[in-house]
Image (cartoon, rainbow, N blue to C red; front, side, top):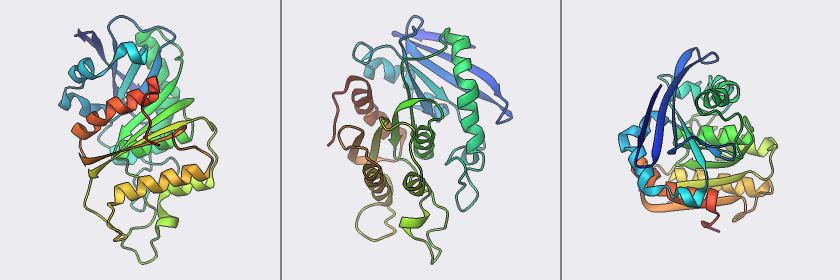
Amino acid sequence: MLRVTTNSITLSEVKCYAASLERVVQVDIYHAAGLPTANSSLLILLDGQDLPTVHFNQWLTQAWRIDAYGPLVIAAIHAGSDRKMEYGVVGAPDYMGRGAKADLHALFIKDQLLQLLNDNLGINSFSSYSIAGFSLGGLTAFDLAWGQVLPFSRVGVFSGSLWWRSVDQDDPIYQDSKHRIIHQKVQQTICNNPQLRFFFQCGGLDENNDRNKNGIIDSIDDTVDLLHGLEQKGFIKGEHLAYLEIPTGKHNLETWLEAMPHFFEWGWSNKFRNA
């Protein structure tokens, strides 16, 4: 284990063998200097391997208002070389078979992650559990929260790959209303936690695709449609649902870090709302 403390933030790089995935998984643990306590909340971030490229540790020092958000532990899980198979929707691979190992990735989080954190922080439970991800990681985070792999209370979806579909969009039979996998899952299942809260972010420059030619890029259409689907399930805009659209935002870590303070404010200080 490598542990470094700089500018009031401690970063611990830990590894363990994930039996379900049959590979070694690295988890980067970020928290305020000093050992966290039992009243700490946990935020799981997917695609943790990408965060050092934008100097996430230093960014946290500047952007993370620790005094406002309370004791918070961030566990950033590194994806493996088989990311497109391990990420996705549990039990529902896409039309190319991607996401076939999503259930095994979920097992690692359910069965091993908390033990790993306990071994390294001495905490066997947290005051609350949240999960967030970017792009395909955002889709995965939503699915894990919806399925309550852990007792999640918040989920952050940054430019989520909510287009994930069971039929190729170029197939003549393709329909948004039938073949977007996560939209269908929400429509056909019940969330075990009706108080779960959702934060979505999209960038106006996320992509150029507009499959239905309505003048709105697909990533925004897919996100707004999912928000509507959640509203139909009883989740309330402004209470359970928040949406942040950054007009100049792109599909990159720089944009997602721009949105991250809004996510922290919304999730841990309740100051942010976009009703």
